[in-house]
Image (cartoon, rainbow, N blue to C red; front, side, top):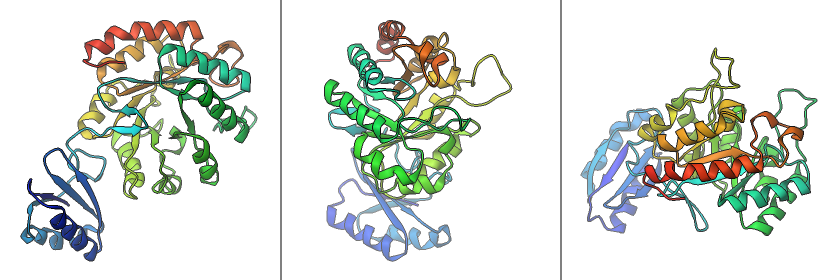
Length: 338
């Protein structure tokens, strides 16, 4: 249920409604809009008739049921777009945000060189995996804490924010210590135990869509984080498995406007995994901007031919810088800045 307060509701009346929601055994999720406050009451729906009675409380305008299964990530709860703020950076606002860097941190020299290129491009966030989920147990698995230390050094030298993947809840505190944004990879999108652990983190969380998952399943995965009080959630479209074999995945460009219609959460596009081929990354990056993506995540490696993971889909520094230049008219045409 969503309890909509009247436009002139004072804080005392809002607090009284929140207290009553808690008395009924529900968890309140208030949100202050530009015109009024709304409060989502999340819990066992068998008691929804008790919540309906809140309409009689002072300063309550109406009580509206949330019909969709995704209660907090959907537009029924929040009609305005969410903006995730990290320091002075805003994701989901009127500027396109660019995340870039190698798939995995391979050495100190490699990540520092990559960070300088990312900084030069005007991008704001450095990506790099210290823990890597690989299909084969014999493939490079990442440097662990050593890789996180190199990422932190790159941040100190360039001022870039860091996004890196959390693979196991065992490493949560370690990753929290170093990163600015926690990435949940496609393979862990439905690892509900891991997602539940992220409810109390103070870090923003980006959840990648599973390679065989529907959009509504992605939104329900976000609910696991949102329902615990962490509202700093980003969604990421990174391609899905289909019968097509010409590309590594099928980049579901449709998902970007669909998610923006269904959810208030910012949407990040990852054309690198979406295509799996560096040749196709630039056109799909431009298409993602035109489709309304709030941010792009691009894989770029100082020497893609020698990359220990995902070299085939990684752009070289020169190609990456060229792409950033070519994105400008698409950004401007969408009414945004960079």
